[in-house]
Length: 132
Image (cartoon, rainbow, N blue to C red; front, side, top):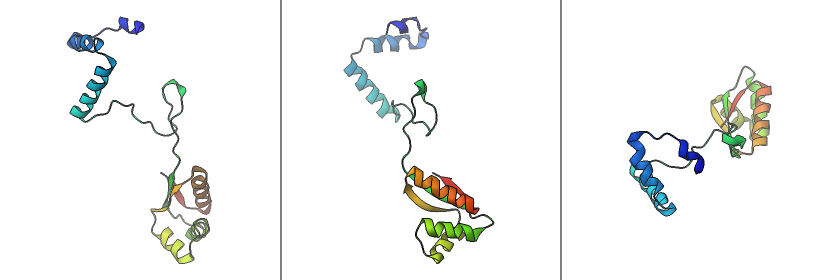
């Protein structure tokens, strides 16, 4: 706390800062909880997008479940239907209906590796996919 002594405090906040400095840790915790309830906010750090750098160079917690959405079937719809049929173990009619309904979720709660493989396979066949 010694390094914070040199921070210039605006006059309008001086009384508040002085009061906070005199509080115990228990009182500070109670103050934070009261402010959260009063203003409908959270004092916790905001969450960062996956892959975004965080302060101090520590990586953000990585997402583990992905939703694969077919956004466009592309020009070669038959190839995309074949990939979807094989990857999702569907019948031909079900796969065709799914591809025809694009944009449409192909599969939810997939592991990252599986979702990326499905995305790659569909894109190689000519479709467009988005991971969520």
